[in-house]
Image (cartoon, rainbow, N blue to C red; front, side, top):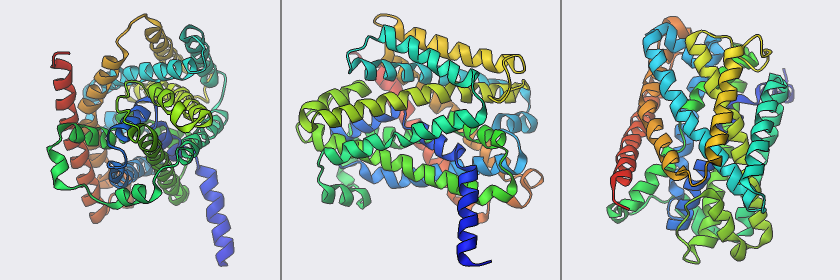
Length: 421
């Protein structure tokens, strides 16, 4: 087979399996992620861009393991946890996952409300309409159509890249800070440590692993397509972190440069950017926030419904009709309705709710990473596709670092909640 023929075949296989890895990685840039990256740029300018490199490596390592388990076993992560570790442990994990993801769904609808309010539309109009749109998207669609819509939504993240360019940053400084490790003196700044943990910690969340593996299984990716599936994960990880890099750069070039350091909501960044970078950058940033929030508000409830149904043995899948998978669709519906309703409560403490969801994320993450690493190294389960020696070192090191950062983040979040206002 000639080089060009092999290249065309590989490209065809890549586009055939493109979806799960690319979509999952991009959803991670949700309302909470945008808030974190915006704060990093506003508070520390370009000085946290160095975190993007370890973030990308960690994301690729963890997501690749999930994709590989899905391809080889044909089963979702919660399904494997139930089979290998028992129903009691699975029920505990699923309970935590529902609580965590509900808090995240609330944060996404809060992002929708904030983004649409920038265009002078009340949240009492935008949130119910978007909740209905999210519900219809999955209930009335099938896997192929839903995946195509999600891929298009992933492409809209380019808004942040354009906004970053329009902000006219110092490209030389941004590139230098991306590859330059911070000086030892900055670690005495408690807020810098907190922000570093936040930027790195927002990368890998429990729901991502469950959703990616379930998507790979439902898409029907087999072992022959494994290399293309792995490339899907790698491309998705690079793209989402390039977007994150541009969000930090956009806020560094505008907000940080002009001394505007306080961002409480993701929509605050777009609002503050308007007089500094112009109406077009403002519109792109606001549109990107709406797309990211709507996108994540669609995927997070699906991820939760997939995981719980797999773990507890119920039928699931967007290719099934409502009567074929009633528990799947009712759980999906409940998460959307309840998440949207919470945002509509006047004066509801959305920021503490978002913080609580991150605390619960931190509680669950060590369990998920431990189970993943135990499962993928089972010879009778994975055969020749277990982790190699060096991949295991990288994977365990990633897990230890992520868990360590999560513990630090948890301590700081709890301290913040207990501190007097």
